[in-house]
Length: 117
Image (cartoon, helix red, strand yellow):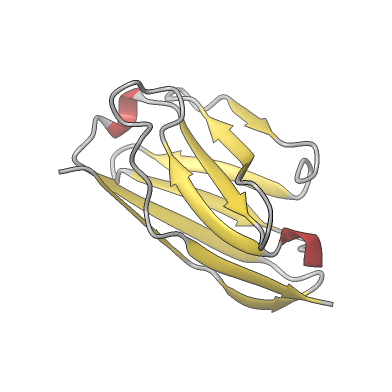
């Protein structure tokens, strides 16, 4: 059974930092590209950052130079270090295996990030 469990969200002031985690099970975590997405109220879900199985990263322009995506394949855990947070970063953050035909349909419950101005 595939499970993705996000954690680490919370309420933070603008300029602050948070570290999100995503614990994966039931899938070959070390072999798949993993990514973080977010969804703000009233908006479509959008890509935040991806990381390949070998650690190559890609970021949305809006978070480049502020967020760092990483993974620990031994722990089957995905991370997102978020620095210099802005109110526009507010939303529910999800992890996913976006390019896997078998696992891309699985989503966790998400973790809420709220940045106050």
